[in-house]
Image (cartoon, rainbow, N blue to C red; front, side, top):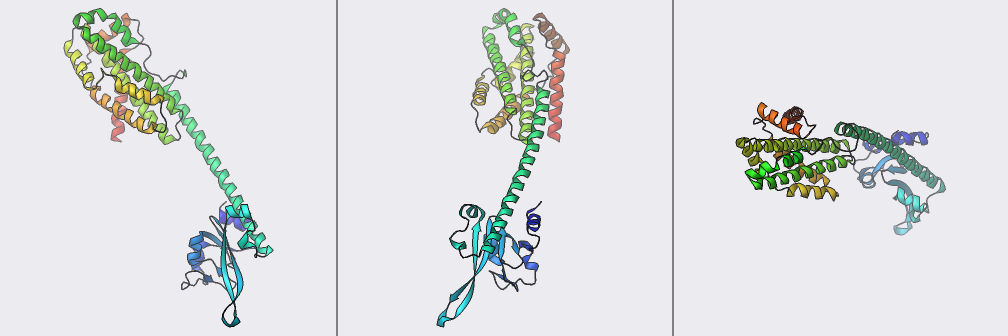
Amino acid sequence: MNEFKLLEKRFPKIKFLPWENIKSHSFYNPSDKMTSYTTKGVVFGGEVGKVYGMSFVTEDGKFGYGRTGLLILTTKIKTGFFGKKNSILEYNFISFDFFEKQGRNNFLTDVPDKDFNFLKRLNGVHNEYKTILINEENKREDTRLKNLNESKSELINELDKDGNGQVDVVEGNDFNSLLKKHQKSIVEIDRNYVQQFVKISSYLKTKKENIQSIFNSIKDTPNKEVLNEYVEILKDEIHSYNLILLNSLNMIVSLVEDDMITFYEIHEKFDNLNMFDSKHEKDISQKLKNIGDGLKTLMYEIRKVGEEISYSIQDLTYVTEDLNKQLTNQLSEIDSTLKVGNLINTINTYQNYKNNRRLN
């Protein structure tokens, strides 16, 4: 129910005129900026209605009902020159808030009881309408939150299929296990490579922790727009993690298998991305732990870095069938459950999805 309908319902014998329709009535006097005369009184037209934000007036022009308060027209007799008495029309405005607190204040003391009681009834309509609006807003908010929580549950279940509260990324610690298995061989080639691989391991660990932190923050998103945006960033981060993991594993295998061209191709890409210095990822981790209102800015920073990583190492043309077999065999020797083919398919599928998203 709108405000006008509520006024008509509560005052069936009183005719109210919408403010915006006043100028269409024959009594409107465009030459008078302050008032519009009727046969019964003065309508709050012209500048008066604008100043006080009137929405409706009674047909006799005696009372105004607006967004913030009420107007009442009073007539006072004043003595002028030579004792001549004149009728003076005065506008009195009282806000709804002030009416509630003060009631019959100083400038309404002369208002007849009948008129004052009418103002009280108008004020009651305002309170009733305000309650209706609040209830409607509460219903809309309840519906919005219900839909938002359903969307959150759906997306969370998609990202955490086993429901253990941890986002689904590649399980296990295959990179470290493979590194330890070939540590002696790597030392014999170049001791410095061990240190670089340890830094990659630290990078992967920190990135996985950051992915979990982003996943946790999704539960607190305020609306669907932010939810969808953060989920896209999270999926991008998982994609980046998968790319880094696959390249890291192939880097170890290519080194111990004496495929130095592939090794240096990956090494060069990682070096350009400062992958051997996990400081940035650790900074992100620290910010995610101490985040306040700056989550949105941080998310955009994470997205930007993730896109740089994906763009730099997304080319998997070096991954030959022989290299796949070598990696699969190496992983089987450390009892890994990781399926190389599945990981590559996951990466390629998401990359195609991203490309289509850009086109659309």
